[in-house]
Amino acid sequence: MAHGGSMLALLLMLGASTIARAQEAELPVSEVAPGIFVHSGTTALMTRENEGAIANVGFVVGNAAVAVIDTGGSVREGRQLLAAIKRRTDKPIRYVINTHAHPDHSFGNAAFAREGISFVGHKNLPRAIAARGQFYLDGFRRTMGDELINEVRIIPPTVLVEDTLTLDLGGRTLALKAWPAAHSDNDLSVFDDRTKTLFAGDMVFLSHIPVVDGSLKGWLRALDELAAIPAQRVVPGHGPVSEWPAALADERRYLERLAADVRALVAGGKPITAAAAQAGASERTRWQLFDDYNARNATAAFSEIEWE
Amino acid sequence: MLRHRIRLLCVASALCVASLLSVALGVRAVPAAETYDPWPGLVQDIFNNRPINDGSDVIGIEMPARAEDAAIVPVTLRTKLSPGDSRRIVTITLVIDQNPAPMAAKFTLGPDANVTEISTRVRVNNYTDVHAVAELSDGKLYMTKTYVKASGGCSAPAAKNAEEANNRLGQMRYRQFAKTDQGAASATREAQIMIGHPNNSGLQMDQVTQLYVPAFFINQLELWQGDSLVLAMHGGISISEDPNIRFTYVSNGAKQFRAEAKDTDGHVFQHEWKVENPGT
Image (tube, rainbow over all chains, first blue to last red; front, side, top):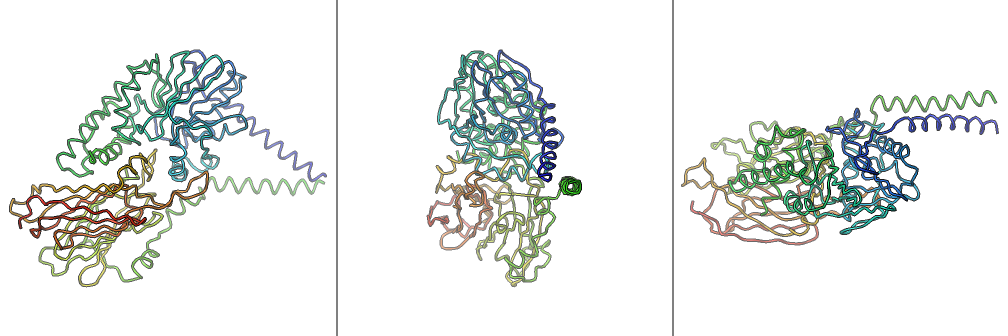
């Protein structure tokens, strides 16, 4: 009995310190439109120091429920987002929408894994998670460390979006759209009709160089349809909340330049290694993290365009 | 009761210290795997412990120091034997030490094709040594190596566009390049073969179902000019999606170039092309 009592006391002590830490930390968010809250990720690679908080994440508050749009690059960031939500509303969280499989958008999922919360994703999201989940966990352990990665859980969607889906939060609806391969092969966008706000996920980059991990040609094809969404503002996957559709201009210019450069190299019989060195080079000064991603984009683009 | 509590606290603090230590020291399977050198074991498994000589004068390997895209890492193998050398390269084995299945490919060079350069693309799962081992006509093995860092970010050695990968299944492309550094009369040719195939590794475990995505890849490829073998490849799962091989060879004047590929499901893909400017 005494044994059990002291164990209980110990557990309570440990539990209390965990809870205290969770309550302290709150992700800074701003209300970019009524009921639309966004945390702006820092433009960087995911590291131990930034706790993976490099992507924009947010939430939408309806009269009856809350939808979370992306959960961040660590469970710690996810918990801090949860704390920010609790501070601003007592409406229950009903949906967690993952705009795609990349770790900076979904490693925080475990913070929201509880009864009553549905995880929503593109119909291809389970496949992408299956193929990449373990590699992401191993790879980011190297840059983020055990402490952050140990608690990450790969959580698959329970609601799949085949084409479009409408979520009712009470007094406002979110229109979700599953795109053909573009930034990735599992991109999902979220449009709030009430405030005309588009959460574009990584279909839209500003400042941060766009990253091609699906299909460059598919992405270029999607831009017109994306631009036609009647939004006033966009919350991009990376970069500042911006006016729509003007926010697309830089990304369109970059992707078109990359495709044109790669086409010229393929036509000239140049090897794939030439693409990494040359394609898109004229865009260097216009983007952050250019040297981290451009060669990779060019390599991926080459392997796609050489099949034309 | 007091004794109980002390003992419990000791247990608890010992656990805490242990976990703090493991955090501080970074004790984990992944970093450990990077310090462990699998090469001696691979020499045993792949080369039956045969002696391996320094091959820096025999074969060169070029790869980027950092794998920009872990799914598509270009690699070029180049023979370094002087034209007067009486030996020739019979096979080249490409080994990516830290990959789940390290033997990426074994190339057999046609006896009369004088292949001097082979470029392909591989998946790289980790920070790793990459070895190229040439077997010469004197029966000896010669090795050279390089080191590649797998890239971070959203890069992964998996399909970017899984539908497209399946749509292209079995498509074959052949392309001949102008060799600008050779005279027009030279018989040296540079060509490329592309095969549409997802080349699934079978090593990607679904974190949710704990099941593996089934392996499905090109395991054999033969390239012929007329009835003479130019190049053959026994491929493994480290070869990138849509296997792509660019190579040089010497034309024997044959008017047809032929490719035959087989995959692990027993599909056979065959195609034949008319050679531009076949003359020797």
